[in-house]
Structures are given as C-alpha cells and as structure tokens.
Length: 445
Image (cartoon, rainbow, N blue to C red; front, side, top):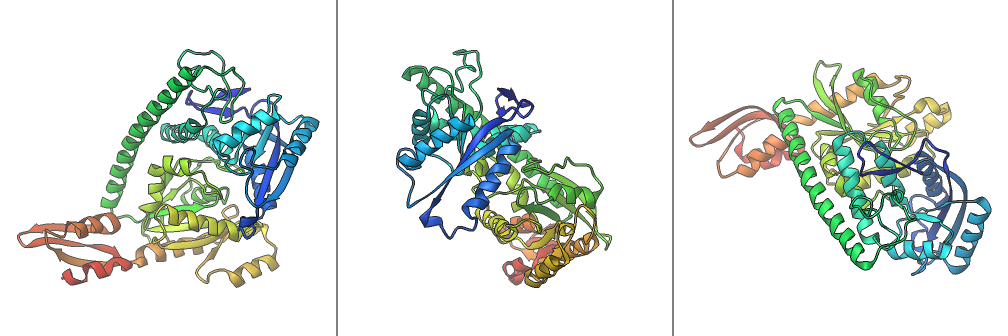
C-alpha cells in the first residue's frame, strides 16, 4: 500500500494506487473561536492536503470543546460517532486537523481498532513533503523532520526501523504506519537509539548543506546583485511567476506544495539592472515545527534576501488570512525586517467588482498581477527595481579594525564594490540598505 520515494528511507502514500478512504475530524477549541481560519476553512484545506497526499476524503466529523480530551482528544460520545461513521464509510484512515500528542494517537488507534490508522495534520504534511522531495537536500530535510516526529511516538505499534535493522521484511506504512506486531521493550529501545543516531547523522549532513548554501550566498553577494525571494502561501503561484518573469520551465502544478526546493534565476529589470529571483517553499497554517527546523538551510534563502515579494492568491476566499499567516511565519524565521512587496496574483479569476474592492483596501504600493496571463508583470518588474536598487544608498566609509561587526554587516547586508585595507582602517565603497545607515554614520567619508 506504500511506495518508496527517491530516497528509500522516506515513506509516502501511494498516489498511483486507488486513493485510500479517509474520514476527517476537526475540533474547534473555544479558546480558538477567534482564530483567523474557521473550522470549516481549515477542514477544506485539510481536504486539499489529503487529496494531494493520495487520499479520498469520504466524510467529516466536527466537535467544539473547551479543551481536548486528555486521552482521546475528542469526547467519548464523539469517538463512538467517528467509529460508527468510519465503519459505515469504510474509512481506513482517520485524519485529524491538528497535531496529536503521542498519547492521543495511541489511545485513538486502540479505541477505534479494526486496523484504523490515525494520522494528524502534521504527519500528512510531512508525507506530502516526502512525495515532493526531488533533490538530495530536500530528501534529507524531510527525512529529518519525519524522524523527529516519529521518535516520541515510537511504541509497540511503531516499528519503522525494524525492517531497516533486519527485524522484519515488510513495510509498515508511512507517517502513520501500523500493522506489524510490536517488538519487546528491548527492541523499542534499540529503535529509539537508531532513530537518535539517524537524526544526528542527518543534522550533520544538513549542516554541510547549510555551509554549502552559505558559500553560494557569499559568492552571490560578491557579484553585488540584489537577491529577491518569492514567498507566499502554498499554491499562490510562485513557480508560475518565476517561469513567466525569467522564461524558465520550473515544474508547476495546481496542488499544495508542488515544489519544495528553492530555485534561483537571474531577472533583468526594465532599467537594465539585474536581480537574483529565488522561489521558496510555500507556507501554510499550522506548519509543523519540525519541518521549519529541518528546512532551516532553505529558509535562510529568505532571511538573506534584500527584498521579499509576497505573492497572495487574490482569488482565494481566505486570501487575507493566508497573507497574515505568511507574515507571522516570516517573523518566526527572523525575516520580519526585510522590505516586503505585496503582490496579488490570479486577478484573472476575479470579477471587475471584486478587483475594484481589492484595490480599495490593499496597500497602495501593492501590485495586482496574473502570472498565468502576464497581466501586470511590467508593473511588478518596475516595483521590484524600486524595492531593490532604490532601497539601497551609496556609502563610502572608513571602519576601524575593531569594528569587525560593521565590516561583516556591510558584506552580509550590503553590496561591497571596493574594499581597501589601510593602516588606520578599512575603506569600503558600496551600497547599503537605508535602514542600516545609522550604524555607519560616524564613519562616512
């Protein structure tokens, strides 16, 4: 029922076989009634995630609670309703819209019985990332996130490493896999140690990837070409936009997380100037913490950018909620201080009245485009030119040798054109973001 991704250690749902029937479960906590996404909106997104992972959503169950049940997340009566409906619809997977604790998952699978697999939103997103990981780096990142997720959930029913260490020949399933008889406690301890070893090894490999990326970024800095990162909610159209602007052919699909690995291309602006345009992984609400940690090297492409082009799907009913979710995620990864150009995409799907409404409440500097038809792309290119080259100002400074921090800042955040090491200091000529000028004011020539 499973297939192996390009990396044999990553399990994914089999999208080539018949879709597995799944029953969705959503819980609205009273403490979260003012949440940006309603329960129905969140479940519709979960449904899209499920379909992307190769599931067939056959029904849903919802409940409002003051807090999750300590054992089974949902209440006893609701659990019986889930059990009966799953049997009626022949649902093999029970898909929860939130991340479940290891105890919740164990108790739910015990109570539901009959081979039912309980998968939470986090496991589902990890599964999708495993399916879409195309490069060695992407596979390493997903595998690390999966192992971090699995470690606290390793029990008698979680024997992922048994087949890898010679304990069993069959596969157990992906992110929520069960099905084999559990080994004894000694074997569980062996499995835990094996997972911890694999996590350490993956972290070491990804540190090498991070160093490699950092060297590439330093090389790009030496070229004095501004870096522009495309960011946005998943499926906002970033890859389509990159293809349009740079005349390239990056994989595009109308599904969540179609591409994971960052792609950088040169873009010549109408002014004749050039920028490096990078497509990055899409964001989503309830983005798993382990995934953010594992994709640290990739997300640094965003943190190191001179300008963020925030692409928003203007046709989506939750466009503004998605926009705010992306802004929150940018703050979490340390990119909140980078200039942002908001771009509303897919305006070809809006009526004239809806487009007029959008223009009425959007930021005056926001740009309206259709990456599909090409509408508004000239205006976008001009806005990128303003946001990059006009966001910088020319400086010539002589920094004392003791101010190594400012020298590093000039290299990391600015564009160094010329540098001379003199007896009384370091003379640097280059471009610097305006918001950093105050640090260098005392040393300007």
